[in-house]
Image 1 (spheres, rainbow, N blue to C red):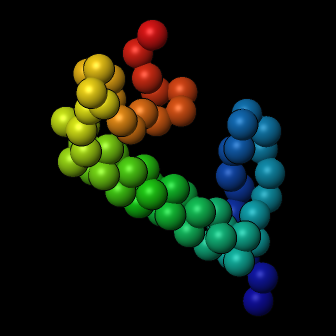
Image 2 (cartoon, rainbow, N blue to C red; image 1 turned 30 degrees about the vertical axis):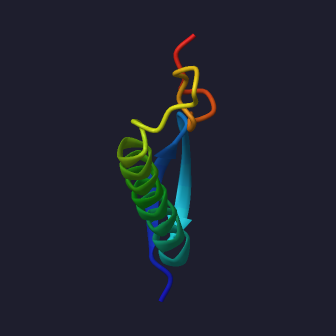
Length: 65
């Protein structure tokens, strides 16, 4: 039995079968988990500075200019 779900992705309506829906959900869960892990790691090491006072670790696209 093939179940179909309507999903809106980037403003485009599409039909996903159950397997595709599960894969999409898994990708979203993994992305959220990685984001949380990266944020926690960066927070733990934010106090590490170079001798001239600059942060040793910065996240690409996230540093202050």
